[in-house]
Amino acid sequence: MIEQLDYMDLIKLGVSSLATLMGVFLSWYLKYKYGEYKQKKMYKEITNSKLIQTILDQLLIDYNCQRAFILQKHNGGKYNSGKSIVKLSTSFESLEEGVSTEFKEYQNLPITLYSTFVENVIAYRGTYLSVDSVDDVITRAFFTQRGTKSAIVYPIKKSSEVIAMLGFEWTHTEDDLAKSINEIEKKLKSTCDTLSKLL
Image: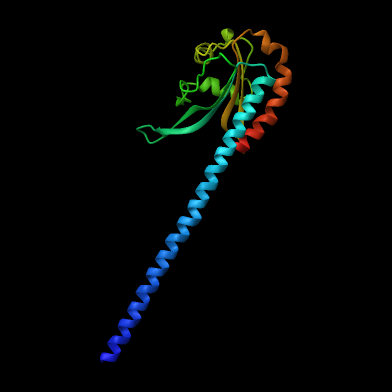
């Protein structure tokens, strides 16, 4: 009987030790695997962000505009009914020297308030040769508060869903855009396709 108890205690001790070793190994493995995954993901996001910023900086020069920006769509909480609040926030901005940054002022904009503006952009009608002549008051206010005379805003889509909007603003004269609008619009589709892979 004593030998049986010792044998049983040894089995329990062995199982307990094995479980402890497995737990330590599993803990190490998960930290290694997912910690490394998170670092790679963060590195990729930083690399993509730098690339997006470089693209915007170059387009600012190419299009001779004063401000280039990306507004990204995101979830902004929930209404009391449980329905999600969809918002837009400026995630990238490139500026000509001497032009004010609007990055901080244009965060968490409810899409419901800017519905006409967003609908026009989605339908590829986001070209505003003269902001002063825009019919929609909210769209006009969005640009005039930023000192914009002319603008183009184009949708960035991923699998036919709009995930963001790419915009260019001219704060000088409306003529700046009228001269080169066709060339800009031809290039925007491929630019937005590239950006959709990076966002």
